[in-house]
Amino acid sequence: MAYVIGLLGYKGGVGKTTTAIHLAAALLKRGEVQVVDGDSNGSARLWAQGGNLPFPVRSLLQFRGADDGFVVVDSAARPSTAELTDLAEFCDLLIVPSNPEGMSLDALQQTVHRLEDLKIKHYRALLTMIPPAPSKKGIEARTYLIENNIPLFETGIRRTDAFLDASTQGSLVYEVKGSRVAKVAWLDFEALGTEVLAFLDSSPRKKS
Ligand SMILES: Nc1ncnc2c1ncn2[C@@H]1O[C@H](COP(=O)(O)OP(=O)(O)OP(=O)(O)O)[C@@H](O)[C@H]1O
Ligand SMILES: [Mg+2]
Image (cartoon, rainbow, N blue to C red):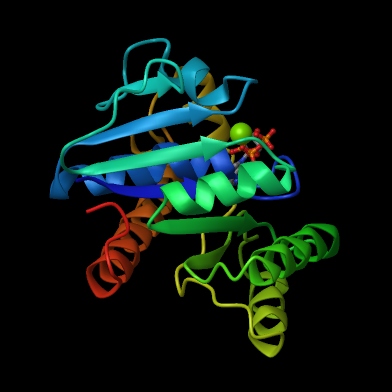
C-alpha cells in the first residue's frame, strides 16, 4: 500500500496547498506520487490545471487509491472533528503548517490540542513563510513551539514570492525564472522530503 500524508490546519492561508504540491514533488524520487485535493476550493487542482506538474492531482471523487508510492492529501482549513478523525485514520503522517505569526501559532496550538484530545500522535508541525535574516521571527516561533512541546520538523520553509509565482504559473518553485531564492526555497522542500521519509520509515504503516 501507499504511504498517505495529510496537510491539516485550523487557519487558512498558512501554506497547506503549497506544501502539498512541493512535498509531492520532493517525494517523486522515491516512488509514484499523487496529490488528492480534499479542499472544496480546489486550489491544488487549479495549480495542476496547466498540466505542468510531474504528478497527478485528483479530487476526492477521482481518487481510486494507490498500491504503492505516496499520496499527499491537501485539506480544507477548520476541519470538523469527524473530518479530522477521518483524515488521521487515512494518513500515516499529518503535517500541520503554520507561519511564524502569533495568530497562526495560536491556531496551530489549537489544532495540536484537538489532535491530542483525539489521541492522535502521528503529526508534526511545519514552520512556513519564514522571513529572511535579519528577522528572528522563524527562530522565535521555533523556540515557542519547542517550549510548548509541539513536535515539529527541523526543516522550515522560507518566505519568498517565488511560491506565489509558482502557483500562478501552475509550476513548481524551482521552475520560476529569474529568482535565485526560488532554487534555494526548493531545497527547503527537498530537506522536508528527507525528514518525511525518515518519519515514515520509522513509524508503523497504517494502511498495510
Ligand atoms: N513560503 C512561502 N512564502 C511566501 N508565500 C507563500 C509561501 N507559502 C505559501 N505562500 C503564499 O501564501 C498564500 C497561502 O498559501 P496556501 O494557499 O498554500 O495556503 P493554504 O493553507 O493552503 O490556504 P487555504 O487555507 O486557503 O487553503 C498563497 O498566496 C501562497 O502563494
Ligand atoms: Mg489550500
